[in-house]
Image (tube, each protein chain N blue to C red):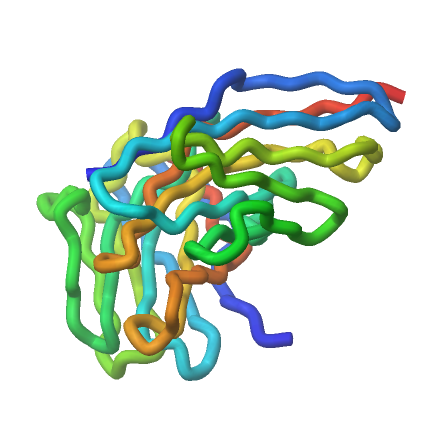
Length: 113
Length: 116
């Protein structure tokens, strides 16, 4: 069984500051890892995914994440926050053999002007 | 760009009433998922279809919830009777399925259910 832990349910950053969202996973086999963003009353949009290729993954809207097997982590970063980044972010894990996604509890990002 | 469609977007109902949600996946996507997202939590899988067959409904409360995908295309999720604790966002997602090298799921906008 796999699971995801997102550290920090709320993150507040200033516009232009670094955004760092933490995600740790547990999995018995090499996982696939995902970050999704959700704006209020909308569905989830895929930001980026790790599928056993490059460990540093670049996604949309300037986000990137690094897979660190030794730390079982997949933290999401963006060098400079924009007001439009205010949303809820979910980390998810999937095993290659069953395609089911297990989501973390989410981290809400607020951006201060 | 192809999208997953869901309706209605919002539904308010009273306890003990029946409700139904509809989902139309991206054309050609064999796998369809229904998730429930309680406010402040991540989505939780309720049921997964491969074409018209259910492959996982282990988390579906079968005494009151049912799901079908009769022709392997669109799907309906029903709750009867609705309870206060069913208030949540119901998300539908689809993916190519086993043919793809990884499981990229595409999500619809969701149906927000409020049970009074």
